[in-house]
Image (tube, rainbow, N blue to C red; front, side, top):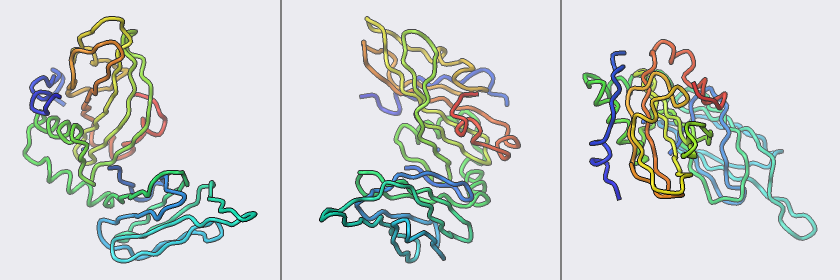
Length: 259
């Protein structure tokens, strides 16, 4: 198994370098899968002051301090319990900001959803975290967090499977998009699976393509040699203009496409 130190020793920083569980952002309606049978939990990075939902749509719950507990109710039909299938809106007021969850019931285990700090707090914390850190070390930091799947709650994380057509020998899927607001960094995590009949070697330069990202600051590949059918993760860090990011950091995620 590769260690993070080994992966980072292979980190490729581009020559154009001159220019972070999921969390739900405030003021953005966000679809979240909840267990249709178990009690689900929502965590606020502060104090919850209100929670609004529709009992007619089969929801029940309460909140205390920084935690809310939400459950879909079941109906008894012909002697058997029928569980909800339709989504329902939940509005939570956390630290004065409003969060909108589109709760979609699913036959899964209980879910814990974390609310991201409001944008002003998020930007300030991110700026402080990366203050006085060279650009290359900023890229290393974000890749370390992605490799361990441990992001600060100030990062905005979208899990969304987006196929990417890069080359015939690889099945490539962008699985995660992570924005670090206020710093101008955006991380993309890809799953690369070999389609070749023999072993293939992957180099970071292979992923310097506009179908992967633009402008690309750094690339790291977890495993450089793949056997047929074997997969690895690829981490790509982009450097975005902070002004443009503040307008709409999620344009690519919303459209489902690459830029």
